[in-house]
Figure 1: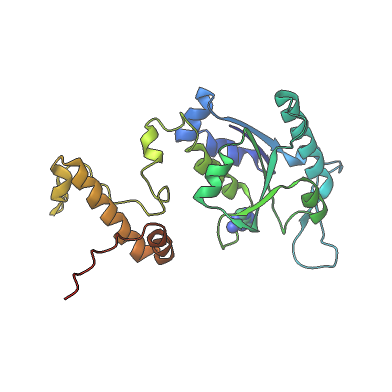
Figure 2 (figure 1 turned 90 degrees about the vertical axis):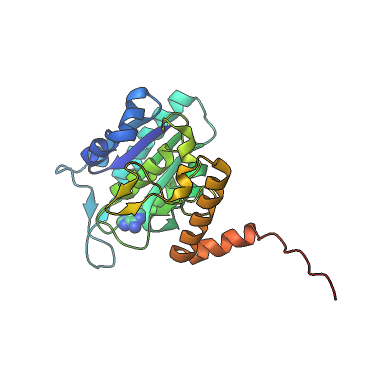
Amino acid sequence: MNYHVMTLFPEMIEHAMNISITGRALKNGILALDVVNIRDYSKDKHNRVDDYPYGGGAGMVMQAQPVYDCHQDLVKKIMDRTKEKGRLPRTIYLTPQGHTFHQKMAEELAKEEDLIFLCGHYEGIDERVLQKIVTDQVSIGDYVLTGGELPAMVMMDTISRLIPGVLHNEDSAEAESFSNDLLEYPQYTRPPEFMGEKVPDILLTGNHAKIEAWRLEQAMERTKKARPELYEAYMLKNPPKLQKRRKKK
Ligand code: ADE
C-alpha cells in the first residue's frame, strides 16, 4: 500500500506514522508513505494558501490552485510508477461532511495500491477543486477537528492493519471487533488473580470449543449492551436456531 498525504503539517503525519506497527511496516517496505506540503505549491509571494470566503463569514478557505497543482504532481508520480493510465487513484478528502468511516470501508480501501488523502484546514477548501479531484469524502465521526490530519491517520492506521504482513499475528485481524459484526470478547492475561478478581475458569480449561462458545456469548452480551443497533443487525443475520416444535397434544 502506498499512502500519499496532502497536508499543511507534514511533520504531524510523518512522526505519528513512523511509530509502532505502521512504523515497522514502513521500514519493512510493506507500506510506503509520501507526505507532501500543499504550501510548496503556493504561487503567492508570502506562500499563502488561504483567503477570505466569498459571500463573507468567519474563517478562511484553502485556495483551489495549490491544492490542484499538488494533486496533479502526485497523480503524475503515481501514474509514472504504475503505468496505469486509465484509472485515477482514489483521493479521499477528510471532512465532517463526508460518509462516516467504518470497518467495511477500510476493508474495501485496503485493496487499493495507492490512496491519496487530502487534509483540509481552516473553514474548508474551495469547492471547485474538490469537485475536480476528490473521489471520496470521509468523516471519522460527528465532531469537528481542527484539520484532516488526525482523521487521515485514523484511516491509514485502520487500513494498514488489514494489509497482509503488517500485523505479525495474522489471526488477530480476524477475531476482533466488527470483523463478525460483534464487538470483541473480553481478554485476560497473567496473573490469574488481580486485586481479588479471578480470570474466568472456562479460559483455564483448555477446552477450545467451550472457550469459543463462551467468547461468542460474551461478545453478544457486550454488543447488546453497548451497541444495540449492531446487535440487532447481527441477530437478523444470524437468527437463533428454530426451537423444536412442541408436540401437539
Ligand atoms: N475534519 C474536521 N473534522 C473532521 C472529522 N470529524 N472527520 C473528518 N475530517 C474532519
